[in-house]
Length: 371
Image 1: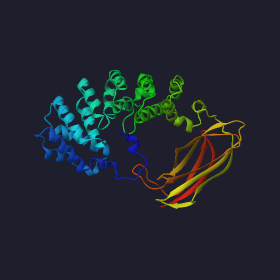
Image 2 (image 1 turned 45 degrees about the horizontal axis):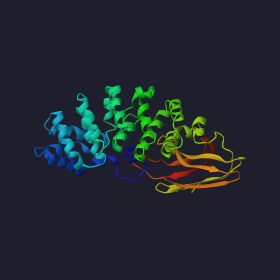
Image 3 (image 1 turned 45 degrees about the vertical axis):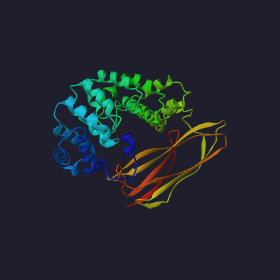
Image 4 (image 1 turned 90 degrees about the horizontal axis):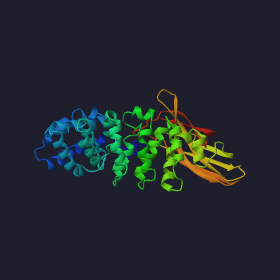
């Protein structure tokens, strides 16, 4: 389950509505189905308390505490019940309330909790819950996660990487791994050519996290990786994206690109010049290679979103990786939605747009957003 995907720019109801009353009732009914004494009414009263005021992660935790209050009370017995209920509750974000239960009530029963998290992650990722165990005993928990990196189930393998990301979105940072990422080397090594895209995305995101604090560690690690495997090459490209956006020469060289692109810009424009919120802008660029031999180019664009304060904050987007022959021209065009999402609110004003080639600013344009 890709929670970063859930946080992307998609028009959707508020994410907290994943834990709406209908879903809470479903969780209750499935729990009662495997444990008939379960008090559905009591659970619903607790789980829906002040529900509208709670965000998605607060709702997740309230589900877990409400389960605890209405289940028999013994941790091992409750895990047995929730394990039986998990398939009926089903796959999806709402099922992360089960690993959250483990994080809240299972820290003192390490072995049982590791088994539970390994199982629950197949339904709703245990990536948030495992971090509480890492926080308490990093070495012991990483040892278990290293075995997960070789598991036959891709959800378990993904947990091995995703759960120990130093800067996992929606969770607290793992400061020891920000300071020194070397303890996770074995996990990343094991999955550097994983067959599952779901897993490869996590490995790439994990490495990209590390580049923000320890770029030399990532560059040294992938230097040792064979480049003939397409899965490994894909991970490397995605892992280096932040460094490439910054024009890092070492990162660009891994893609066969040079720091200084040899191009002649023909056009870069954003249209229309003024748009109302809810409409897209079209970004277009055209340039010709002036190099004497073929060259690889990494093209990105950045939108400087106006903030509530009136200042602007740049967001860099991947556009295209190409190889141009001498004298060859490249024409690109892309549409960017300018509407409010669950993860971004727009504000009126002039938005600057940058064209970036190999991490370097090549051209600028702008449009005015009207609200």
